[in-house]
Image (cartoon, rainbow, N blue to C red):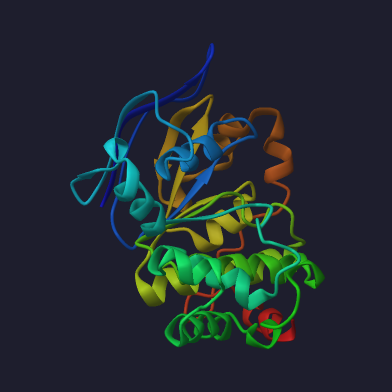
Length: 273
């Protein structure tokens, strides 16, 4: 279980995250929602320790993550994988090598420096690409791929870290609706197949309703909503988003899913890509 206890992140006079306390069980798919500048990205980066909390504690299964340093901190970042809005791939490298960088924590430094990846590492990377239906892209340069394909490569890189938790920071913000669904389908499959905890920052309430088990709404660095998606009424959304409410409420929540939980039409979109 992930436990956040009174965590704040302060930059000068700004409290980007303000006294946040949450408990998130293993295997949950939690959407973090709120307007731009609400503190969503800072929250996820603090959990990975890319940003240092100014106050409070973070625990994972009774381990004090906020006090880790050195090798223990590097191991936590391996177990707490990040997926970014801008993919963070090395464009000049091929897809397979980009995915293999997720194995760095499992590989001796001299091997990775010389690109002497083991047969096991290559097999793990190819298996991840196959699961996301992009194994055929393995030899291609990353910068030749579409945005949706690049984000799936980034998900594969996170998956081969063998993490306990995935933090996805606006993973679909730069994608068109079709590719956004494909990426969210991939995160949902990982969550359900492997039981990995997923925290996903989302701006779209449509996607939040369709994919998440629980929504955490943030405003001015504070948690102001924490409940199942069905509890987020239009009035609550307008309070949460303020002037941005009309933008996020344009599309009614789709909610309709296929028997396996995948939103209707998403599977056919994925196979068409």
